[in-house]
Structure formats: structure tokens, C-alpha cells
Length: 381
Image (cartoon, rainbow, N blue to C red; front, side, top):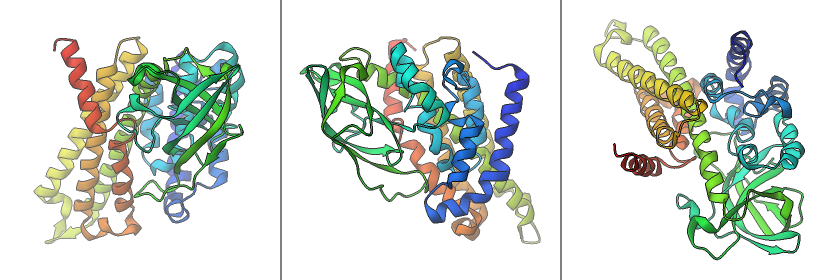
């Protein structure tokens, strides 16, 4: 259910001021410490950011996809690690439960997820399984009223602080996606262990780590959907997540363009501001045009999803275009800033590193192309 216009405008204004006044001044600190200050996390909880996509009946804000994307656009104007703090609760960590959970499962978990009391993670990727997500090797063997879960998941966002994992595991002998099921796995079950966070290129403050399952007794009541439905659930979750990441990418691009315009208007070479030089203008024009196109595609697709339309292809197209676009915008930003763009003090090189990940998670650009081609062929054009 959509918020009324006045309430939603107030939410956007609150998020915009939070980003500008509270988050952007902390960007260098987060980069240096590789951690989000706890007081910031507490403010995010108080604002309801952990429950953006969760229904009001469970304590969330219950935003539509369009509304969620518009909030994500605002959050994209700062270091992506801030959004990642609650991003798994809003997207891939909670949406399997929202889409396929039983009444009892939702009542038990969603209020705590919406409040931020529980942080969730989505555990699909494995050491030997990435883009071929139907090839998971983690196994869940039925043993009375529990499944015995064993395997390792890799590069799991927010694993270091997650209390609940949505885990994809193989429950049958059927090959490929048909043998995969989904489970809600609390961190405190015996046999669950978390590896050390990985050192990454960018997005400092957002942690990824291995999650190991050693004969973990997962109650049958914690299975999401029926056996063999895990892959289907995962793909539905990723459709929504791809739109969210697309919107964040547009927000980062808008921030970079604004920074470029401000810098180019002040920086002088050959006796005038570099913004007056046509080759600088060309880079700004290319960035702005691509950003506007991505924004339109994201919001149009989000509106179609809210209307109940099949947006598998459009979500993949939005994710492909927006994430590739922000990479180009970040590259041009470094070029416009010149030497300053390569120096940490200006923050441009940080965003250049940060946005590189957008083209990989929630499905690589190459996987998006396969989806777009498959769906286009299926629709006969």
C-alpha cells in the first residue's frame, strides 16, 4: 500500500537531510575505520530504514517498489556502505520471507527485521557456485522434524552481524534448480559459524564473509515454501533487489555529477573554469544523459512491478544499464577532477571503487544480458 503524498514527501525530505547532514560528513571516517558508527545504525533504526519494504502490520513502512526506489535514490548520494547496513533487511535478506513465508514465520521474524533488532543475510553463493546459482552444493537432508544442513556460503553480505540467514540448499537428487530449497537459519543454531570478513576493493564499512554450516539442525518449520521451490524464491527476491540496486546506482551517479559540476565550475585552467571547456562539457553531458535514462527506466519498471506486471526482463535491463552507467560516470568524474580525482581527500576515488561492485552482485552484467535475451526471445521481441 502506497503512503499518502504528504507522508511520503516528509520521508524523502528526512532521508535527504539525513544523508546530507549526518552521513556524508562521516564518509572519510567510515572508510578509515571500515565500520559504520553504532550511533548511525541506531538513527537508521529509529527512522524505520530497516523496514522500508516490510508491511506496516509487521512494523515496517510498507513502501511500494516506486517508493522504495525513490528512497534508494536519495541513499545513493553517500557511501554505499551506509545503505548496505540495512539493505539486506530491506531486500534479499527479508523478501524470501515476505514472498513465501507462512503466517507463523512472518509473525515470528518480520517485526524484528523491520525494527533492526535482527539483521538478515541471503546465503546463495558458494566457493564453487556463483552465477550458476542452480548448482548449489550445500545440502539439507531430512531427519525427522529437522533438516541436517551442511556446506559453505561465500561473500555473504552482512554475515558478520546477521542473526538470520535465508539459505539455499539442495534437498533432493534432482539436478539443477529443481533440487534447491530455501530455509530460514538462525545464527545461534549449533553448527553455524562465520568466517573473518574479507578485505575488499571498496565499500568499506560493509562486510562480507563466509558462513559455514556443519550438520546444522534446521527445523522443518523453517523451510520457506515447498521442497524444490528455493530457486524460484531466490529469483523472485533478486528481481526486486536488482531494481533497488539500480536506484542506488542512479543516486550515486547523481551525486558524482553534482560533485563534477561544482568542481568544474571552480577549477580554472587556461584562464577560465574548466566547465567552460567543451571536452569537459561533453563528459558532463554524457553522464547526465545516461543518468536520466537510467532513472526513467528504473522508475518505470518499478511502477510496472507495483501494477503486478512481469518485470523479469525490465528489472535485468535496469540493473544492467544503471550499474554499467554509474561505472562510466565514476570514471569520467576521476577524469574531470584530474589529479584530485585520484587523491583520497576528495572522495571521488572512493566512489570509483565503491560502484564497481554494483556490476557483480545481484547477478553480474553478463547474467543480466542472458536474462534480457532469454525474455526477449520468449516474448518474440
